[in-house]
Image (cartoon, rainbow, N blue to C red; front, side, top):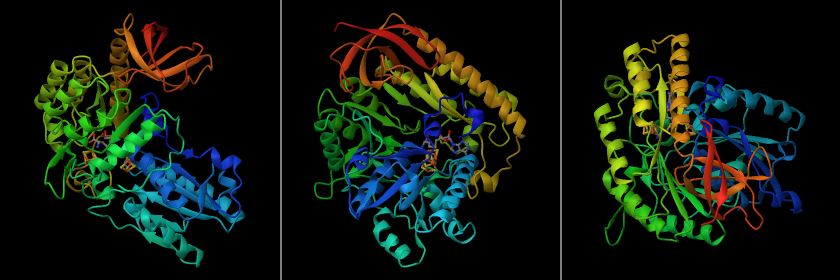
Length: 476
Ligand code: SAH
Ligand code: SF4
Ligand code: F3S
Protein backbone atom coordinates (compact mmCIF):
# COMPACT_ATOMS: atom_id res chain seq x y z
CA UNK A 1 0.00 0.00 0.00
CA UNK A 2 2.65 2.50 1.04
CA UNK A 3 5.46 2.16 -1.51
CA UNK A 4 7.93 3.71 0.92
CA UNK A 5 7.64 0.72 3.22
CA UNK A 6 7.47 -1.94 0.53
CA UNK A 7 10.61 -3.60 1.83
CA UNK A 8 9.43 -3.56 5.42
CA UNK A 9 7.66 -6.94 5.31
CA UNK A 10 4.45 -5.31 6.38
CA UNK A 11 2.05 -8.20 6.16
CA UNK A 12 -0.93 -6.08 7.11
CA UNK A 13 -0.31 -3.64 4.31
CA UNK A 14 0.74 -6.19 1.74
CA UNK A 15 -2.57 -7.98 2.33
CA UNK A 16 -4.51 -4.84 1.59
CA UNK A 17 -7.17 -5.23 -0.99
CA UNK A 18 -7.16 -8.99 -0.84
CA UNK A 19 -10.46 -10.42 -1.98
CA UNK A 20 -12.06 -13.10 0.12
CA UNK A 21 -14.00 -15.93 -1.41
CA UNK A 22 -15.25 -19.31 -0.63
CA UNK A 23 -14.33 -21.89 -3.23
CA UNK A 24 -17.63 -23.71 -2.58
CA UNK A 25 -19.48 -20.75 -4.02
CA UNK A 26 -17.90 -21.36 -7.39
CA UNK A 27 -19.11 -24.88 -7.85
CA UNK A 28 -22.48 -24.82 -6.19
CA UNK A 29 -25.39 -23.27 -8.01
CA UNK A 30 -27.13 -21.24 -5.33
CA UNK A 31 -30.22 -20.56 -7.41
CA UNK A 32 -31.58 -17.11 -6.68
CA UNK A 33 -29.22 -16.37 -3.79
CA UNK A 34 -27.46 -13.05 -4.07
CA UNK A 35 -23.69 -12.84 -4.20
CA UNK A 36 -21.38 -10.59 -2.21
CA UNK A 37 -17.76 -9.73 -2.80
CA UNK A 38 -15.60 -8.37 0.03
CA UNK A 39 -12.15 -6.77 -0.02
CA UNK A 40 -10.33 -6.22 3.27
CA UNK A 41 -7.76 -3.54 4.11
CA UNK A 42 -5.70 -2.92 7.24
CA UNK A 43 -4.99 -5.12 10.23
CA UNK A 44 -5.80 -8.73 11.05
CA UNK A 45 -8.81 -7.58 13.10
CA UNK A 46 -10.37 -6.22 9.92
CA UNK A 47 -9.73 -9.51 8.10
CA UNK A 48 -11.28 -11.33 11.03
CA UNK A 49 -14.28 -8.95 10.96
CA UNK A 50 -14.84 -9.73 7.27
CA UNK A 51 -15.40 -13.35 8.32
CA UNK A 52 -18.04 -12.18 10.82
CA UNK A 53 -19.67 -10.09 8.08
CA UNK A 54 -19.66 -13.15 5.78
CA UNK A 55 -21.43 -15.13 8.49
CA UNK A 56 -24.11 -12.45 8.99
CA UNK A 57 -24.64 -12.15 5.22
CA UNK A 58 -24.87 -15.91 4.73
CA UNK A 59 -27.78 -15.88 7.20
CA UNK A 60 -29.64 -13.50 4.91
CA UNK A 61 -29.27 -15.34 1.62
CA UNK A 62 -25.95 -13.96 0.40
CA UNK A 63 -23.11 -16.17 -0.80
CA UNK A 64 -19.47 -15.07 -1.20
CA UNK A 65 -17.94 -14.73 -4.65
CA UNK A 66 -14.45 -13.77 -5.79
CA UNK A 67 -15.75 -12.32 -9.01
CA UNK A 68 -16.48 -8.65 -8.40
CA UNK A 69 -18.15 -8.36 -11.83
CA UNK A 70 -20.90 -10.80 -10.90
CA UNK A 71 -21.46 -9.54 -7.34
CA UNK A 72 -24.77 -7.96 -6.30
CA UNK A 73 -23.10 -6.48 -3.25
CA UNK A 74 -19.52 -5.14 -3.18
CA UNK A 75 -18.05 -4.36 0.23
CA UNK A 76 -14.75 -2.71 1.17
CA UNK A 77 -13.71 -3.32 4.78
CA UNK A 78 -11.50 -0.29 5.26
CA UNK A 79 -8.59 1.04 7.33
CA UNK A 80 -7.87 4.61 8.51
CA UNK A 81 -4.54 4.08 10.25
CA UNK A 82 -2.52 6.26 7.83
CA UNK A 83 -3.57 8.74 5.14
CA UNK A 84 -2.28 6.43 2.40
CA UNK A 85 -4.57 3.61 3.60
CA UNK A 86 -7.58 5.87 3.08
CA UNK A 87 -6.31 7.13 -0.30
CA UNK A 88 -6.05 3.54 -1.54
CA UNK A 89 -9.69 2.91 -0.67
CA UNK A 90 -10.85 6.16 -2.27
CA UNK A 91 -9.11 5.19 -5.52
CA UNK A 92 -10.64 1.74 -5.38
CA UNK A 93 -14.11 3.24 -4.83
CA UNK A 94 -13.73 5.31 -7.99
CA UNK A 95 -12.90 2.17 -10.00
CA UNK A 96 -15.88 0.38 -8.48
CA UNK A 97 -18.08 3.39 -9.24
CA UNK A 98 -17.29 2.95 -12.96
CA UNK A 99 -18.44 -0.69 -12.71
CA UNK A 100 -21.58 0.46 -10.93
CA UNK A 101 -22.42 2.84 -13.78
CA UNK A 102 -22.44 -0.20 -16.06
CA UNK A 103 -24.44 -2.27 -13.55
CA UNK A 104 -26.79 0.08 -11.67
CA UNK A 105 -28.27 -2.81 -9.64
CA UNK A 106 -25.01 -3.30 -7.80
CA UNK A 107 -24.86 -2.15 -4.15
CA UNK A 108 -21.57 -0.73 -2.86
CA UNK A 109 -20.76 -0.53 0.84
CA UNK A 110 -17.92 0.77 3.00
CA UNK A 111 -17.34 -1.09 6.26
CA UNK A 112 -14.77 -0.76 9.03
CA UNK A 113 -12.63 2.09 10.26
CA UNK A 114 -13.15 4.58 7.38
CA UNK A 115 -16.90 4.11 7.71
CA UNK A 116 -16.58 5.04 11.37
CA UNK A 117 -14.24 7.99 10.81
CA UNK A 118 -15.95 9.58 7.83
CA UNK A 119 -19.53 8.56 8.56
CA UNK A 120 -22.07 10.48 6.47
CA UNK A 121 -19.47 12.31 4.35
CA UNK A 122 -18.91 9.06 2.49
CA UNK A 123 -22.57 9.09 1.44
CA UNK A 124 -23.07 12.80 0.97
CA UNK A 125 -19.86 14.28 -0.37
CA UNK A 126 -18.35 11.40 -2.25
CA UNK A 127 -21.62 9.82 -3.41
CA UNK A 128 -19.76 6.66 -4.29
CA UNK A 129 -21.49 4.32 -1.87
CA UNK A 130 -24.94 3.11 -0.85
CA UNK A 131 -24.03 1.65 2.50
CA UNK A 132 -21.79 2.78 5.40
CA UNK A 133 -21.41 0.42 8.34
CA UNK A 134 -19.09 0.87 11.32
CA UNK A 135 -17.26 -2.03 13.03
CA UNK A 136 -19.84 -2.48 15.81
CA UNK A 137 -22.91 -2.40 13.56
CA UNK A 138 -22.52 -5.49 11.37
CA UNK A 139 -25.55 -7.20 12.89
CA UNK A 140 -27.61 -4.41 11.35
CA UNK A 141 -26.47 -5.29 7.80
CA UNK A 142 -29.62 -7.25 6.79
CA UNK A 143 -31.80 -4.33 7.85
CA UNK A 144 -29.56 -1.76 6.12
CA UNK A 145 -29.53 -3.81 2.93
CA UNK A 146 -33.34 -3.78 3.08
CA UNK A 147 -33.26 0.03 3.22
CA UNK A 148 -30.99 0.12 0.15
CA UNK A 149 -33.38 -2.23 -1.68
CA UNK A 150 -36.15 0.27 -0.89
CA UNK A 151 -34.15 3.02 -2.61
CA UNK A 152 -32.62 4.65 0.51
CA UNK A 153 -29.04 4.82 1.69
CA UNK A 154 -28.06 2.60 4.63
CA UNK A 155 -25.90 3.95 7.46
CA UNK A 156 -25.11 2.71 10.96
CA UNK A 157 -21.90 3.84 12.62
CA UNK A 158 -22.93 3.46 16.26
CA UNK A 159 -20.13 2.23 18.46
CA UNK A 160 -21.01 -0.18 21.23
CA UNK A 161 -19.65 -0.78 24.72
CA UNK A 162 -20.45 -4.48 24.72
CA UNK A 163 -20.62 -5.86 21.14
CA UNK A 164 -18.07 -8.68 20.73
CA UNK A 165 -19.93 -10.83 18.14
CA UNK A 166 -19.25 -13.64 20.62
CA UNK A 167 -22.07 -15.86 19.34
CA UNK A 168 -21.25 -15.48 15.63
CA UNK A 169 -19.49 -18.37 14.00
CA UNK A 170 -17.21 -16.73 11.39
CA UNK A 171 -17.29 -18.04 7.82
CA UNK A 172 -13.61 -18.79 7.12
CA UNK A 173 -13.06 -17.10 3.80
CA UNK A 174 -9.61 -17.16 2.20
CA UNK A 175 -8.45 -20.00 4.43
CA UNK A 176 -5.56 -22.44 4.16
CA UNK A 177 -7.46 -24.78 6.50
CA UNK A 178 -4.51 -24.79 8.95
CA UNK A 179 -4.25 -21.33 10.55
CA UNK A 180 -7.05 -19.00 11.70
CA UNK A 181 -7.60 -15.75 13.60
CA UNK A 182 -9.91 -15.43 16.60
CA UNK A 183 -10.84 -11.97 17.91
CA UNK A 184 -10.77 -11.99 21.71
CA UNK A 185 -11.54 -8.34 22.29
CA UNK A 186 -12.54 -5.17 20.43
CA UNK A 187 -11.69 -1.48 20.64
CA UNK A 188 -8.86 0.16 22.52
CA UNK A 189 -8.76 2.23 25.73
CA UNK A 190 -5.24 3.50 25.22
CA UNK A 191 -4.84 6.94 23.81
CA UNK A 192 -1.58 6.79 21.89
CA UNK A 193 -1.45 10.35 20.59
CA UNK A 194 -0.81 9.34 16.93
CA UNK A 195 -3.52 6.69 16.70
CA UNK A 196 -6.99 6.78 15.20
CA UNK A 197 -8.05 3.31 16.42
CA UNK A 198 -9.74 4.41 19.69
CA UNK A 199 -11.93 6.71 17.56
CA UNK A 200 -12.79 4.15 14.90
CA UNK A 201 -13.17 1.09 17.10
CA UNK A 202 -14.44 2.56 20.35
CA UNK A 203 -13.98 1.37 23.91
CA UNK A 204 -12.14 -1.79 24.78
CA UNK A 205 -14.24 -4.84 25.66
CA UNK A 206 -13.32 -8.48 26.12
CA UNK A 207 -15.16 -11.44 24.72
CA UNK A 208 -16.53 -14.33 26.84
CA UNK A 209 -13.58 -16.77 27.16
CA UNK A 210 -15.82 -19.81 26.86
CA UNK A 211 -16.96 -18.74 23.38
CA UNK A 212 -13.28 -18.28 22.44
CA UNK A 213 -12.39 -21.77 23.68
CA UNK A 214 -15.34 -23.28 21.87
CA UNK A 215 -14.46 -21.51 18.59
CA UNK A 216 -10.84 -22.72 18.89
CA UNK A 217 -11.98 -26.28 19.72
CA UNK A 218 -14.28 -26.28 16.71
CA UNK A 219 -11.39 -25.14 14.47
CA UNK A 220 -9.12 -27.87 15.88
CA UNK A 221 -11.82 -30.50 15.28
CA UNK A 222 -11.98 -29.28 11.67
CA UNK A 223 -8.27 -29.77 11.05
CA UNK A 224 -6.91 -26.32 11.97
CA UNK A 225 -3.62 -26.49 13.88
CA UNK A 226 -2.83 -22.87 14.72
CA UNK A 227 -4.92 -20.03 16.04
CA UNK A 228 -3.92 -16.40 16.62
CA UNK A 229 -5.79 -14.57 19.38
CA UNK A 230 -6.37 -11.00 18.23
CA UNK A 231 -6.77 -7.71 20.05
CA UNK A 232 -5.23 -4.22 19.90
CA UNK A 233 -3.80 -4.85 23.37
CA UNK A 234 -4.26 -8.53 24.28
CA UNK A 235 -2.55 -8.18 27.68
CA UNK A 236 -5.37 -6.01 28.96
CA UNK A 237 -7.93 -8.75 28.21
CA UNK A 238 -10.23 -8.97 31.22
CA UNK A 239 -13.55 -10.80 31.57
CA UNK A 240 -15.53 -11.20 34.74
CA UNK A 241 -17.84 -14.19 35.06
CA UNK A 242 -21.35 -12.80 35.58
CA UNK A 243 -22.25 -15.42 38.21
CA UNK A 244 -19.05 -16.48 39.97
CA UNK A 245 -17.42 -13.04 39.55
CA UNK A 246 -14.17 -14.86 38.78
CA UNK A 247 -11.76 -12.71 36.74
CA UNK A 248 -10.24 -14.09 33.53
CA UNK A 249 -6.97 -12.39 32.61
CA UNK A 250 -5.12 -12.83 29.32
CA UNK A 251 -2.71 -15.28 31.01
CA UNK A 252 -5.68 -17.39 32.11
CA UNK A 253 -7.31 -17.27 28.68
CA UNK A 254 -4.04 -18.28 27.04
CA UNK A 255 -3.82 -21.29 29.35
CA UNK A 256 -7.42 -22.33 28.65
CA UNK A 257 -6.78 -22.22 24.89
CA UNK A 258 -3.41 -24.01 25.20
CA UNK A 259 -5.12 -26.83 27.10
CA UNK A 260 -7.48 -27.59 24.18
CA UNK A 261 -4.90 -29.88 22.57
CA UNK A 262 -1.07 -30.03 22.54
CA UNK A 263 -1.18 -30.12 18.71
CA UNK A 264 -3.03 -26.80 18.52
CA UNK A 265 -0.52 -23.98 18.32
CA UNK A 266 -1.49 -20.72 19.97
CA UNK A 267 -0.27 -17.27 18.93
CA UNK A 268 -1.45 -13.81 19.92
CA UNK A 269 -1.14 -10.20 18.76
CA UNK A 270 -0.66 -7.37 19.73
CA UNK A 271 1.12 -7.06 23.09
CA UNK A 272 1.44 -3.61 24.65
CA UNK A 273 4.74 -3.08 26.52
CA UNK A 274 3.01 -1.42 29.48
CA UNK A 275 0.67 -4.40 30.06
CA UNK A 276 2.87 -7.34 29.02
CA UNK A 277 3.78 -8.62 32.48
CA UNK A 278 5.53 -11.74 33.74
CA UNK A 279 2.31 -13.77 34.32
CA UNK A 280 1.86 -14.16 30.55
CA UNK A 281 5.53 -15.09 30.12
CA UNK A 282 5.29 -17.85 32.75
CA UNK A 283 2.24 -19.35 30.98
CA UNK A 284 4.16 -19.19 27.67
CA UNK A 285 7.07 -21.01 29.28
CA UNK A 286 4.78 -23.71 30.72
CA UNK A 287 3.03 -24.76 27.47
CA UNK A 288 5.02 -25.98 24.49
CA UNK A 289 2.14 -25.21 22.13
CA UNK A 290 2.09 -21.48 22.99
CA UNK A 291 4.45 -20.12 20.36
CA UNK A 292 7.64 -18.41 21.52
CA UNK A 293 6.97 -15.17 19.73
CA UNK A 294 5.86 -11.74 20.93
CA UNK A 295 4.98 -8.76 18.76
CA UNK A 296 5.89 -5.94 21.16
CA UNK A 297 5.74 -2.59 19.29
CA UNK A 298 8.17 0.01 20.63
CA UNK A 299 7.16 2.86 18.21
CA UNK A 300 10.25 4.91 19.21
CA UNK A 301 13.47 4.13 21.07
CA UNK A 302 13.51 7.55 22.75
CA UNK A 303 11.75 8.25 26.05
CA UNK A 304 10.82 11.88 25.28
CA UNK A 305 9.14 10.82 22.03
CA UNK A 306 7.42 7.90 23.79
CA UNK A 307 6.02 10.37 26.28
CA UNK A 308 4.72 12.66 23.48
CA UNK A 309 3.22 9.55 21.88
CA UNK A 310 1.47 8.87 25.20
CA UNK A 311 2.67 5.27 25.13
CA UNK A 312 2.90 5.34 28.98
CA UNK A 313 6.24 3.51 29.13
CA UNK A 314 9.79 4.70 28.63
CA UNK A 315 12.84 3.07 27.08
CA UNK A 316 14.01 1.66 30.44
CA UNK A 317 10.64 -0.02 31.05
CA UNK A 318 10.67 -1.50 27.55
CA UNK A 319 14.22 -2.81 28.03
CA UNK A 320 13.14 -4.39 31.31
CA UNK A 321 10.29 -6.21 29.50
CA UNK A 322 12.73 -7.53 26.88
CA UNK A 323 15.05 -8.77 29.65
CA UNK A 324 12.09 -10.53 31.30
CA UNK A 325 11.22 -12.25 28.01
CA UNK A 326 14.82 -13.39 27.53
CA UNK A 327 14.93 -14.77 31.08
CA UNK A 328 11.54 -16.51 31.24
CA UNK A 329 11.09 -17.61 27.58
CA UNK A 330 14.72 -17.81 26.37
CA UNK A 331 13.90 -19.04 22.84
CA UNK A 332 11.35 -16.25 22.22
CA UNK A 333 11.53 -14.10 19.07
CA UNK A 334 10.42 -10.47 19.36
CA UNK A 335 9.16 -8.16 16.63
CA UNK A 336 8.09 -4.53 16.62
CA UNK A 337 6.25 -1.60 15.04
CA UNK A 338 8.22 1.61 14.53
CA UNK A 339 7.18 5.12 13.52
CA UNK A 340 9.73 7.40 11.82
CA UNK A 341 9.56 11.20 12.10
CA UNK A 342 7.01 11.75 14.85
CA UNK A 343 6.40 15.42 15.75
CA UNK A 344 9.57 17.24 16.98
CA UNK A 345 11.79 14.13 16.70
CA UNK A 346 15.49 15.16 16.56
CA UNK A 347 18.32 13.32 14.80
CA UNK A 348 19.62 12.07 18.18
CA UNK A 349 16.18 10.76 19.09
CA UNK A 350 15.97 9.00 15.74
CA UNK A 351 19.39 7.43 16.52
CA UNK A 352 17.85 6.04 19.75
CA UNK A 353 15.33 4.14 17.62
CA UNK A 354 18.13 2.70 15.46
CA UNK A 355 20.07 1.57 18.53
CA UNK A 356 16.94 0.01 20.01
CA UNK A 357 16.41 -2.17 16.91
CA UNK A 358 19.90 -3.49 17.31
CA UNK A 359 19.71 -3.93 21.11
CA UNK A 360 16.31 -5.66 21.00
CA UNK A 361 17.47 -7.94 18.17
CA UNK A 362 14.03 -7.87 16.54
CA UNK A 363 13.41 -10.74 14.14
CA UNK A 364 11.37 -8.27 12.06
CA UNK A 365 9.47 -5.00 12.28
CA UNK A 366 6.63 -3.14 10.60
CA UNK A 367 7.98 0.35 9.88
CA UNK A 368 6.05 3.50 9.00
CA UNK A 369 6.42 7.21 8.41
CA UNK A 370 4.33 9.25 10.82
CA UNK A 371 1.03 10.23 9.21
CA UNK A 372 -1.07 12.81 11.04
CA UNK A 373 -4.65 11.64 11.64
CA UNK A 374 -7.40 14.23 12.14
CA UNK A 375 -8.87 14.33 15.64
CA UNK A 376 -6.03 12.50 17.38
CA UNK A 377 -4.24 14.02 20.36
CA UNK A 378 -1.08 14.58 18.28
CA UNK A 379 -3.04 16.39 15.54
CA UNK A 380 -4.60 18.66 18.15
CA UNK A 381 -1.53 19.31 20.32
CA UNK A 382 1.59 19.05 18.16
CA UNK A 383 2.81 20.22 14.77
CA UNK A 384 3.62 17.59 12.16
CA UNK A 385 6.93 19.39 11.68
CA UNK A 386 9.33 16.80 10.27
CA UNK A 387 9.67 17.45 6.51
CA UNK A 388 8.64 14.59 4.23
CA UNK A 389 12.17 14.02 2.88
CA UNK A 390 13.59 13.73 6.42
CA UNK A 391 10.83 11.30 7.43
CA UNK A 392 11.63 9.28 4.32
CA UNK A 393 15.36 9.24 5.01
CA UNK A 394 14.83 8.23 8.64
CA UNK A 395 12.45 5.47 7.57
CA UNK A 396 15.02 4.18 5.05
CA UNK A 397 17.65 4.09 7.79
CA UNK A 398 15.28 2.21 10.08
CA UNK A 399 14.44 -0.28 7.31
CA UNK A 400 18.16 -0.78 6.54
CA UNK A 401 19.00 -1.32 10.22
CA UNK A 402 16.14 -3.79 10.65
CA UNK A 403 17.24 -5.73 7.53
CA UNK A 404 20.75 -6.03 8.91
CA UNK A 405 19.49 -7.12 12.34
CA UNK A 406 16.97 -9.58 10.80
CA UNK A 407 19.68 -11.16 8.66
CA UNK A 408 21.94 -11.63 11.70
CA UNK A 409 19.03 -12.92 13.76
CA UNK A 410 17.94 -15.45 11.12
CA UNK A 411 21.51 -16.48 10.29
CA UNK A 412 21.96 -17.63 13.91
CA UNK A 413 19.27 -20.27 13.22
CA UNK A 414 21.46 -22.05 10.64
CA UNK A 415 22.41 -25.49 11.94
CA UNK A 416 19.45 -25.58 14.36
CA UNK A 417 16.34 -27.73 14.02
CA UNK A 418 12.82 -26.30 14.44
CA UNK A 419 9.37 -27.82 14.73
CA UNK A 420 7.45 -26.46 11.74
CA UNK A 421 3.72 -26.51 11.03
CA UNK A 422 3.24 -27.05 7.28
CA UNK A 423 0.93 -24.30 5.91
CA UNK A 424 1.00 -25.08 2.18
CA UNK A 425 3.10 -24.81 -0.98
CA UNK A 426 5.84 -22.21 -1.04
CA UNK A 427 5.00 -19.21 -3.23
CA UNK A 428 7.88 -19.89 -5.62
CA UNK A 429 7.68 -23.66 -6.14
CA UNK A 430 5.12 -26.38 -5.64
CA UNK A 431 8.01 -28.75 -4.97
CA UNK A 432 8.57 -26.94 -1.66
CA UNK A 433 6.44 -26.48 1.44
CA UNK A 434 6.27 -23.35 3.56
CA UNK A 435 5.63 -23.24 7.28
CA UNK A 436 6.66 -21.32 10.38
CA UNK A 437 8.68 -22.08 13.45
CA UNK A 438 7.26 -21.28 16.89
CA UNK A 439 9.28 -18.05 16.60
CA UNK A 440 7.10 -17.06 13.61
CA UNK A 441 9.96 -17.32 11.12
CA UNK A 442 8.96 -18.45 7.65
CA UNK A 443 10.78 -21.63 6.59
CA UNK A 444 10.90 -23.14 3.08
CA UNK A 445 11.86 -26.81 2.61
CA UNK A 446 11.52 -29.55 -0.03
CA UNK A 447 8.35 -31.67 0.16
CA UNK A 448 8.42 -35.30 1.15
CA UNK A 449 5.80 -37.88 0.16
CA UNK A 450 2.96 -38.47 2.62
CA UNK A 451 3.13 -35.02 4.21
CA UNK A 452 0.38 -32.41 3.95
CA UNK A 453 -0.57 -28.96 5.28
CA UNK A 454 -1.45 -29.26 8.98
CA UNK A 455 1.33 -31.79 9.70
CA UNK A 456 4.25 -30.98 11.98
CA UNK A 457 7.82 -31.71 10.83
CA UNK A 458 11.32 -31.11 12.16
CA UNK A 459 13.34 -28.90 9.80
CA UNK A 460 17.12 -28.39 9.92
CA UNK A 461 17.99 -24.86 8.81
CA UNK A 462 20.66 -24.66 6.10
CA UNK A 463 20.53 -21.03 4.90
CA UNK A 464 18.89 -17.67 5.60
CA UNK A 465 17.91 -14.35 4.07
CA UNK A 466 16.69 -11.37 6.12
CA UNK A 467 13.10 -12.62 5.77
CA UNK A 468 13.15 -16.40 5.24
CA UNK A 469 14.91 -19.56 6.40
CA UNK A 470 15.60 -22.50 4.10
CA UNK A 471 16.17 -26.07 5.27
CA UNK A 472 15.31 -29.76 4.98
CA UNK A 473 13.13 -32.17 6.88
CA UNK A 474 14.99 -34.38 9.37
CA UNK A 475 13.66 -37.35 11.36
CA UNK A 476 11.94 -36.57 14.68
N1 SAH B 1 -2.52 -1.84 18.91
C1 SAH B 1 -1.27 -1.96 18.31
C2 SAH B 1 -1.11 -1.21 17.02
C3 SAH B 1 -2.20 -1.05 16.07
S1 SAH B 1 -1.91 0.02 14.72
C4 SAH B 1 -0.23 -1.43 19.28
O1 SAH B 1 -0.51 -0.65 20.15
O2 SAH B 1 0.92 -1.76 19.09
C5 SAH B 1 -0.47 -0.72 13.96
C6 SAH B 1 0.71 0.18 13.89
O3 SAH B 1 0.48 1.25 12.99
C7 SAH B 1 1.11 0.88 15.18
O4 SAH B 1 1.81 0.06 16.04
C8 SAH B 1 1.95 2.02 14.68
O5 SAH B 1 3.30 1.65 14.52
C9 SAH B 1 1.36 2.30 13.30
N2 SAH B 1 0.60 3.56 13.31
C10 SAH B 1 -0.52 3.84 13.99
N3 SAH B 1 -0.90 5.11 13.77
C11 SAH B 1 0.01 5.65 12.92
C12 SAH B 1 0.17 6.94 12.33
N4 SAH B 1 -0.67 7.93 12.58
N5 SAH B 1 1.22 7.12 11.49
C13 SAH B 1 2.10 6.12 11.24
N6 SAH B 1 2.00 4.90 11.77
C14 SAH B 1 0.96 4.66 12.61
FE1 SF4 C 1 -3.59 2.61 18.75
FE2 SF4 C 1 -2.18 2.69 20.97
FE3 SF4 C 1 -4.53 1.43 20.95
FE4 SF4 C 1 -2.45 0.39 19.64
S1 SF4 C 1 -2.62 0.67 21.86
S2 SF4 C 1 -4.53 0.60 18.87
S3 SF4 C 1 -1.39 2.19 18.90
S4 SF4 C 1 -4.20 3.62 20.69
FE1 F3S D 1 -6.71 0.02 10.30
FE2 F3S D 1 -8.82 -0.04 11.81
FE3 F3S D 1 -7.06 -1.99 11.94
S1 F3S D 1 -7.63 1.74 11.37
S2 F3S D 1 -5.16 -0.97 11.45
S3 F3S D 1 -8.30 -1.49 10.20
S4 F3S D 1 -8.27 -1.20 13.62
